[in-house]
Length: 430
Ligand SMILES: *Cc1c(COP(=O)(O)O)cnc(C)c1O
Image (cartoon, protein in one colour):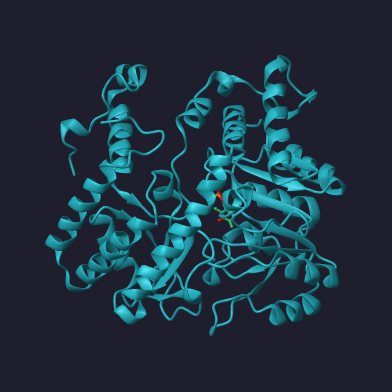
């Protein structure tokens, strides 16, 4: 689709970029419009603030700083050390941990660093199976973590959609994994960190809480914290936490050295200082009272959306949500997840197709669609809008089934109209 001229970034928004590379600037411009005009429901995405955007576009980018504050392998760290110390201090204060490492490039390398810190190649590790809602990096076969380690995987119960702790305990005691991962990418319910910690203790495993999806909810007090229970906490910074693309590892003091050594020099070279700076800004924002309101509003919106979908006959995994995420099983609607996701995209509603537990279809063509409320809540939409959102999804899925492109275009117009009334953080005003 050729974007209309009006959808190009005005030259004053990114003047240097527009002058030096109009082709790239135009792509940024149309992406800005897309993010402004659409209803973004991918639960791992968000809108960062202008402050976070600015921090991640600074000259801190120009600096090499392998090592840690006060012990670098390059000179000229007077300011960089302070930036990283600020990010670390804010992470420790926000989550209440002994130790924080803010250098992992993203969530996947952060998790790989945990393996490097606590396991040897070939060791047994345990995590939730990917099709159940776990993450690739929790020992799934196609991931390095499943190729270099022996991944054993737990599931959710078919009848409840909840973790089957009896089965987790049995598997852990039988397999004696070095690491147990809890957390995942498609889990609509509260994670019982205490139950996982008890099993880890019984089986002699290190418990890793991967809170990538829910870090912002935890920071805002809208989900229980893993800090009293987990040995190590891994998180991305760019999902509900609303920071730049990056990650952090949080740990008890006893694991601090092992974690730091694993990240550098074990796995990475120079940290991305512009990202560290933007993480510091995001952590500062997340420490404000308004972020608590945000986190609770994300959950309230997800629950209102779940209720509105249930009222329209949708089948939700686990029957609803406790957090920011809703996993719809479209089997009863007789529309494959991918067909629905692509149709909704044409209607200006951006989601992702996803497996549901015990999916009868294939991972690349599954039965589910995964949605979440972090982005729309960042724009200020509230529970009063969730019936409208559910209605669009309902009409969109029905239009997907019947191939009604006109219906999708009509929804697209309605979406753009509502979105125009709720400008997104970080995006230029039209
Ligand atoms: C998103 C996510 C990751 C990986 O993060 P990337 O930054 O995409 O590498 C790891 N674990 C969980 C549970 C996630 O949701």
